[in-house]
Image (cartoon, rainbow, N blue to C red):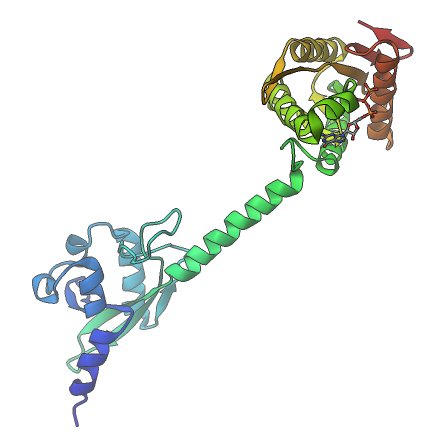
Length: 317
Ligand SMILES: Nc1nc2c(ncn2[C@@H]2O[C@H](COP(=O)(O)OP(=O)(O)OP(=O)(O)O)[C@@H](O)[C@H]2O)c(=O)[nH]1
């Protein structure tokens, strides 16, 4: 008994693409799924060369694949992870991020007719759901990684990540014999500011200040929030003179800035401690922080709104 009554409806209802070519790459068959997605009719394309009908195909790759399938008489596969699609077909989903085309898992099957004619059948399975899911996952992972590094309020680096970078920079500095400096700065009389403008006013100043500071730094510097209103900057490839210059510019620029909060113009000043990497033992990063912290403490004690450097003695500029 012939089963053609069965195959016709099944092939036309199938939610996967079927395409058959002979050994000269002439189209023998496409099913309804492909007619619909590629906006073609089998009658119009039958006997035409595959690459003339689908002009975007990876021709030389596909020729090699099909020839191997015919000569070895074994199937070949291509997943969307290796090659997102073979046939450039639009997908039917509303928004899928970076791709407008259907991601595909493809199987290439060797076929023979009763007269011994050879063919390749390309089965195309729509894998766009898996592709979209993976994209969302990657985006979420990237966002997570980002938020793991940043301080939630000011969007500069959080202390943990900043300290990791400081340690790495100390090692790099040792390996390449380059100078490394550290600034620790703290807002002056920030408690008064909070008392006067409320905690939200204080937060506003921290956010705006961080944005200003970022603009003054190089991409290679590491700017992080060390604690409440205390921040640290690792200045790569920067010696004492360079670090002083950056610190002073920062100090002056912030002192000359007004932060506009509600109807208020808020002025703040910074005290900054500077330290330069001098030894390379395993506690070098901690010692550098401690030296900058001592300089910062002295800057506070000697009147605030100033830069002090820690070296053999504490030097004011
Ligand atoms: N708004 C706001 N305030 C914070 C935050 N973190 C810490 N603070 C406040 O910062 C203030 C720091 O006060 P102090 O350590 O006394 O220092 P100061 O008033 O800045 O005085 P000096 O450092 O001596 O100039 C405290 O009132 C903290 O509550 C924050 O995330 N947001």
